[in-house]
Length: 281
Length: 153
Image (cartoon, rainbow over all chains, first blue to last red; front, side):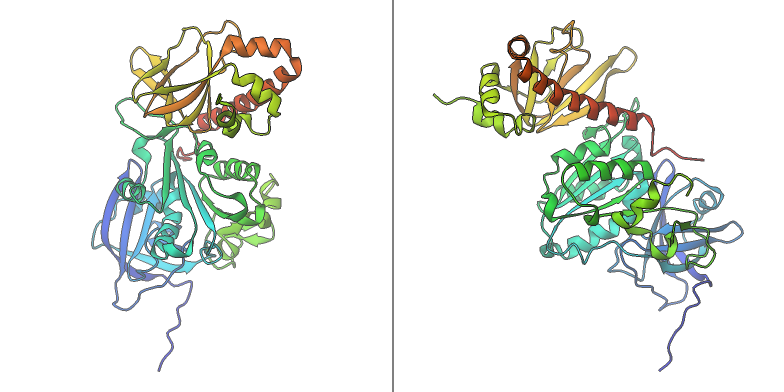
């Protein structure tokens, strides 16, 4: 029997099986290995380095179902040169992929507890695997709540899936938008995502929170959760920094004594909090 | 005779308020119900009620001539609606409309002001609670204005 070793710095070719536009500036790619059998098991919260040939490489969180490692799903926001080039790729095109890297969301530690998942903007993408994971093992968890905030109704990700989840009796889903531009329809809430926390009705002592979104949104969300009686040890956030090598060698994503790529991107709040308030970092 | 006191005590606004104070304020309260789409109040009207939402959803809206009603905030169970009854000239600054069947307590603004004038300790306690709500809303509005989900390029 031979053991297959994968060089973490060597991108493998993956083919785009499906490319679809989610919102004005966000798209989702479903990838399959160019070579049969190259499937990569991953855990919710991990990320891949995606390489657009001739443009560059970027870290992108997994946003698909971890039960299906033969198909990697990535939801990407086209904001820089590489992601803009990536947005132009079509079905059948090849992309380089290294991964999976990084720490996972605490889905095992949440067993037997209430779970509150709080996402802002494209932060819902790295949390979607958590929702798939929990729903596949729903009996293991207590009350599960998803609170999601987006800029406008047109920026809401995974709209049909959110509707499906909202229809379930075992998942509380609340979505809100910051504002409603003229011409857009929205029957949900208006206001920032932190305002949804008061109505979520979870037991702070028995709850584990997972948060992903812009850093300022996560900061205010944590303040709100602490105000409601949650402990810093039961709050997890996903950090984003300039990740390059993804294995803690290059130092680009060093954050205090940690490397976001290797020790994160998911951190327990109390372990990263001392560095969040250091403006020099 | 059954009063609203036990129900008021269960609302977050009254949490940990001294029993005597809740009893005193119960005299200003009544149960109200709004159907989906019903206007609760409009900008410029007399702000004579303080609403505490028990169930349902309410949109705070501002009317813009070119756009019609623009929702600025959604309130739900456990939230307080309106503090213009406390601050002269006691006029609503926004519109409020029920988005679904909504149950609330309506506390008469004039009655509340009267109780606060008679008992400044109670007035201070109420003011602290309302100031906390105003602070939270101001904080949320600032976060909303930051446009945190906007692209950074």
